[in-house]
Length: 247
Image 1 (cartoon, rainbow, N blue to C red):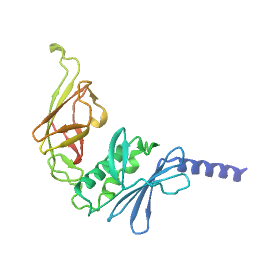
Image 2: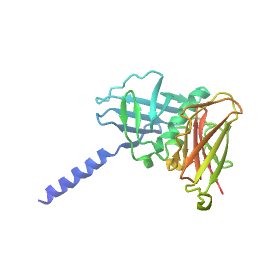
Image 3: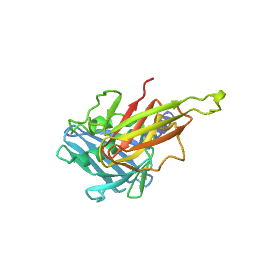
Image 4: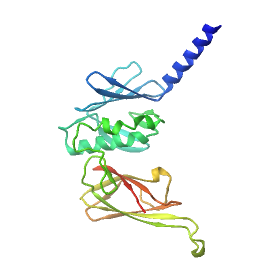
């Protein structure tokens, strides 16, 4: 009876381990691996080291699926074109695209590639993926300057201004809200998404749909309800940035 109990406990532990959506590990040569399986046992695999980052898609038999040199991926319903391999020799556009993809993963709830849907739903396991999967590029860092955290470059292509409006019953303003102004400092900037307070602020229906294209000096205005903005993430085709709003 005692042996049976031990066996049952072992099976339960094994099942819990196997059910973990994201798994990580270290391969030979200091390569860190991140992989997730979908419900049909297809596998999305990332391999990262100091030389570069590499993305693979495998079927249930672990045969690699040919997805070309770049693939269309949707992360939390935000679509992006991502190179399947990147290193220090890649062009800036490839590095920006890879950086946008990697920076979106720690907060991902669903990832769709080639009509295969992966659901990590445990983003805390990917807290180190940004550092590990962008270490090939010395221009990518975790240093924070002026409350701005660049994803792929220290040259931030946007200027951000906000105005918080608290609720005021005397004036008839029932809900607090915030106006967000984003001005492009470069030509042909594409804003793919804006996330306020990690998705806890509601975007108003009057806001324009993404992507938004801005020329140099042009401005996008967003309106978010029931919100006192303290953190704003801006995703563009030239990198993604997190702005911490200090009082």
